[in-house]
Length: 411
Image (cartoon, rainbow, N blue to C red; front, side, top):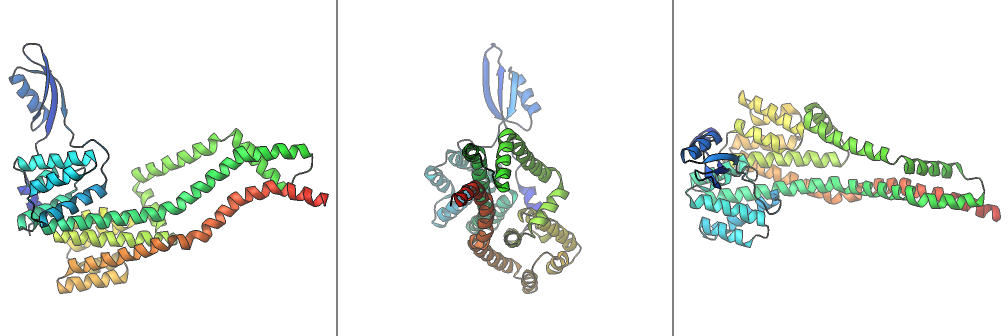
């Protein structure tokens, strides 16, 4: 099949659309929209027509009417596959999908694609006009299918790839969010107790006039400090979150440190490791299906792994394979991939069935992630209960210690 470079050469350059406002010869304010290669060309054309342009702005290809998610795009690909396999023509398939979608934004996007196809564009070209929603991998697979006459199969591969990758992302998010939400709940409950509940007990204890246990006094002091300086822990928390995000965005060294550290966390690290391997295998297999050469595919594969450690390893493999090193040898050099993955890759290279073997690797590790996520709650539940016991239970004990002490004295 043609390489990515060859495919790009035959792709029609998309002409942008501009919206404009101006004043005509009669002094009347008018507006409109036109396609032009650039803003200066359109400005000159409007002046030639006797229109004095006041505002020219490039029209965005983003659609309105609700935020679109990768899951919406995956569903669109699956619906289009089903329609075309049923023998429904392309334009009619798009119209049916648009009419049946509940999101206005998705209907608007599909209608734009339909309009472009009716205007003479191929499906790949119509999708390429919306890079926010259809990435290079998506478009290249569709273009390869159109050129090879296997469009239905390629759309099916796109749908499967999108469904698998989004499912994997959702599982990893679930694994990370569960303990995080429990911890946030514990902190919120503890804060509420310290700010509103503890002061009530303090007033009661002061009426007794008895000496309070040291632990109770410490908790009361903590409550008083939090009431007076609550903005400090809040500010530090916000600054930490913002600083962390900015550090990830601005510093690759910091991002590498975070991603490498996360991979070493018990249970969670194993989930992220296996999901990164699954994404690597799934994306590379899909790129091969589009006829993309190995070296050219590696850039897209690196970005799809979701972890900088695996991204760097993939880019290292790209450099090695560009020098003629076999993929499984380059994979071994990184020391990042399990031996089973290396062996399956080696078998695929030697038998000429690398795409099939990578699919099997992706399936295996996706199942592994499923099992780990399902068992996550059981594995970390003892730790979570211990933390909850220390935070919330400790506050309760601190408040009831004086009552127990007075009860013992009375007895």
